View 1 (cartoon, rainbow, N blue to C red):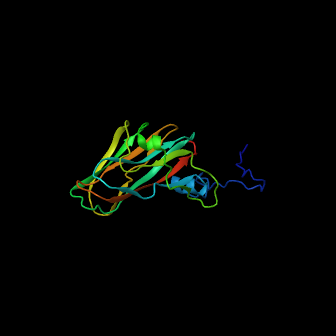
View 2: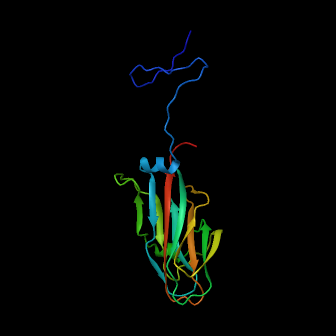
View 3: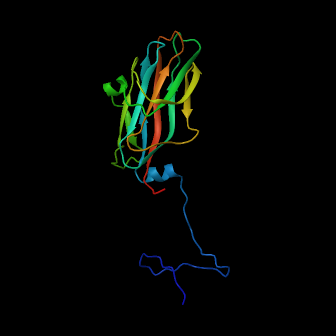
Length: 198
């Protein structure tokens, strides 16, 4: 007895099989980020402008995921303005799971944590704070470090996604070039909740 695969939608369509036993299908393939945005689960996060007035180390961004799925960070951008009076390289450090420091206790919300679907009312389940001159982290493990000269440039951390589960956090700190008296910096990221079962 033959078994037929129906469409399940009430229109009485049947799956087609050719003479070589191949079933006919038509599918649409999308990247995970695109699918997340289309379903209202993709977000843009930005600290907004931060002005650093010394060459000391400052915590400039902190993000903690509070949702129940996996939060995927597709990219982190550190947008550096030109340093005034700075010479040599500045240093960007990304920390894994920092939990304490004045950036966290001061709790200044980032400028934007916006859904990339402009018709969605979904909110990003996270805590996201921007830093300031002299803000600190007092724990967390070093995840990545890179140096850049004092010119205006965008530093992109996008070699591979970073995944945060509930309670995980990420921190970014920056040390401007030696002698710096003024440098603007912005931290931005593209993130999405992965709600599809893996």
